[in-house]
Image (cartoon, rainbow, N blue to C red; front, side, top):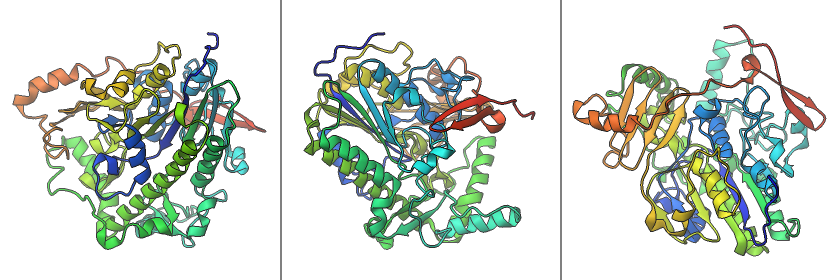
Length: 501
């Protein structure tokens, strides 16, 4: 495929945030303070019913970047698709742009943060915030490696509880001072400029403001934030935005798990006991929510730096902006904290577009998928279509939001799949258990209708969208067949014998 003759082809600013649910002011949330996402939505089109394709970070990001479902690639957890044992023939989004005449630069958390998860083939430049991290295969972690940390670790009461529990179970194992799950803490305001996300935001802002793009070529600039992913270590000023007495905690509805199928109920109760029980006992729920809100507002501020630089620089009139999150987040709903569920809290994410050929101030409520990102950008930029894309282009909807029609999209967790549209959410688990929620009437998913005979027709119709076959899992790090080999500034995944079960 030869390079495209581009002329006035638009630039792309591709912004990723991490574990941000639908708590956005422009989406109607009354608690989260998100002025910069709100201004992006006002300048473009916001999809309020957008869903991620997987319940974990790595497969969600792999799916968006490759334009393919996890059950098509076999990337269900942390399998790097580009490893020689997996699917190296796939041309991901940045590589497609690079092969079609774009200069392609990125930085921060666009792929999963484990070492070696950046597919380097697609990038002219990838910004690494700390050179020391190259020795571990460019694991772009935002804590440790020189990033500022709270004075006392673990910092939160629930993280201290989990740390003490781990010490009791494994007294000989060295303590992990940063237990990223359920961890939050205050940093001094003056350390904000030393944070990984801040450094990366400044790098992207400098590029946009100073006109550093190669002359005569449009650019694709990827900018990825770790926030609001745990641990929520952010400057004090963001915590001050949310006085604890004013924080509202979603909490769990009484009896909400009683109508779950047996094995799912058992699993969810065990998870609830592990985290939600101690959170309640320690009276830490509102504090945990406050930490998440503070991290949202910090992430929003970093997005704001980049958007302001775009507005003040030479590329404002001809740049498409897309912002997305890899997963949503539970904050106590159904007794869950974090994600990893096939419920709405894990799948519903911010998805906002702005720029040339995109309507301003529009809100689209019909269902879309992050899988649609790849073909939409290709369409908006006039590039040849990638026939392997499994999403649909939203370009016509972005131009005329009133033409949007609802459709079903999929979210998967290995062999379990949810089918989602505006009215219903149907899930069939790999053990055959099912859930059905009338989302338009029961957005909190409190009433599982799957066992009620009068809804058999709905289930039959929704089940037609389930995948007919699922790829075998690819190889992942360690015992699953791959080892990261680092030599200088190069790294590659090499095959190792699979460990016997």
